Length: 550
Image 1 (cartoon, rainbow, N blue to C red):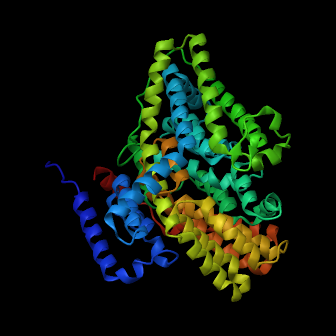
Image 2 (cartoon, rainbow, N blue to C red; image 1 turned 30 degrees about the horizontal axis):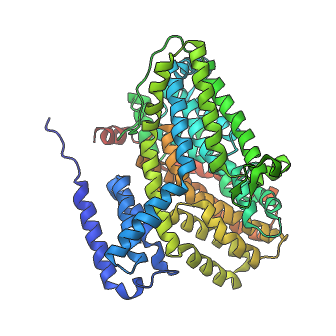
């Protein structure tokens, strides 16, 4: 059989860029003054559309950055190049330095655990104790819920621990990435002790942030119903959309990827000396040290600065310390301590020699390079939209709409927050701009005000969950070692399903204003929708085989 020709990706990118250039030239008058207008959302839209069309993340993000750089300088090429390299790439690397360190060190720990045979031993243990695919999915879900401290930490830790389990049960990497992503930001957004709770607290006035966050939890439909969705779909053993193709290929052919592979994929290592404790102990130590580090750093933060002087260290309570912490400082600190512990432990256990342990250091770093590169480009793109004042434009739209359809406003806020977080790839930036507007629109302490805050937070999580340029989405791909665009394309139908149900619930909540009743209705509606989709969408095995062959 003749080899099938691959789709020409490069010409598509070129044609798309030429069409974009023509459009820009046509509307040059308005684009020259793009700041604070609808045009400010064009760069992320270009990047997202190109990524979904070409299935290639790096060039799509880079083209989006170029478009943003040109727009920030009224299409002056030299000035645009300066903006791209400084405000874009350089600031992105500087701003993510702590996260890069955490990613790299965690990759090293994962490499050590794999080399020691700990991951393989855990996989063998899981094969005897976790009997079904549903059990493996629910175990992954449970671990994701338990690790609620920070979404970055959640994505990478859950992925490294559960990959051997889900692989042994022939669960696709796309499904694993979805479960990780769906139990990262959504769980952090309903956990009072988390880096997300701390971020929300910082955006509210008069020290009322944590109280607002806690009272908003029962109305945060996207986060809560996402958890219901995962449990239901795991028990049903049903998938739809492109996820169904990935899952069918995994079950029937043992193909965990369907198309593409994770570029940092590490080789399977056989080490008969490895035991389950060689995986569990380093992870538990990392969790314990991370919690301690988050609290310690919270006690040492004065404003945005970390004070090293022990005499100036505050004695804040556990929750107050979390509200004051900086995870970009605490998590790298914790990961370095855990790395040293893991090396010493592996050498003392004699499952690795010191030389073998040192070889794992560059291997772990290399495995995380693709995630770091995508995160750099995505952050550079966010920086460009920040210069273009995209969030301020959306904020003004929300504020202007507050005079009409008052009870419907939570649903409107949810949609706007979704769109803004999807386009900019940041949930924190989204609720950072919208929370002050929501608190100004609704009376503080009112039920409708609480629902409005919940809609803002839920929409930010939803948009972040769907966005291919979101750092959480990127790290979920890295944690599952899944091709990034496979993860994005398979999870969007699921995320949009829950988003649609959440939109309906925010409409109802604006009138019912009872958390228990609305949550019961939302749970029942989520389960009913899944059974309805299963009834209406018939599985087509031939389609899965055809697409796998392609």
